[in-house]
Length: 233
Image 1 (cartoon, rainbow, N blue to C red):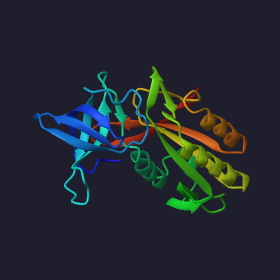
Image 2: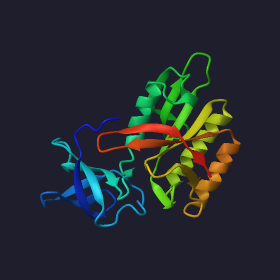
Image 3: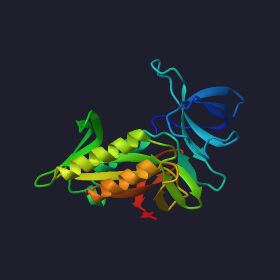
Image 4: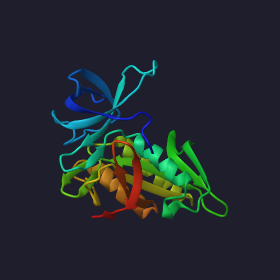
């Protein structure tokens, strides 16, 4: 998935009100960027970070910049925008690049299901059970090489697990797909200490037949692509 507009580097001044971030551009100008990430962004919002912004001239948008990436000093990148995984995954699903889901020929987004919910992707194909795929963006890392989810309590995420379990119980295929938006991690674990209820609900969902897939991403200031399946601790 290519970014719509070439990204430009900046320095983070502060993130506030969850969805706003003040940044300093290379020419010294200070701008406010939209931060499309409702999570805590633990370890990802310290002043002075090198960040990458996507400019826009859309009159319908209140802000002229969107915060897309964090560039770490070791050459690795972190994807900030939680909407990116859905866009990148849709492209991969349509191209049938996810081996575990490649048999499906139809990909539909944001389909209503369960109790007033929408599934990220509903996959269908001849002689195959319908497959409900929920996607979560993973950005937290508190140990070297280990990505974790969630980074804060997520009642919405817990609800999604219950809905997936219901689909599995009804005879459909249900998949919880975690997309790690960090290039410095090759392992994954649930952050049960941050949200014990989510971790418990996940165990129940897995027992009900919900599958878990975890994929890494390749990230540059030009694009974000789904990479390879990674291990779970």
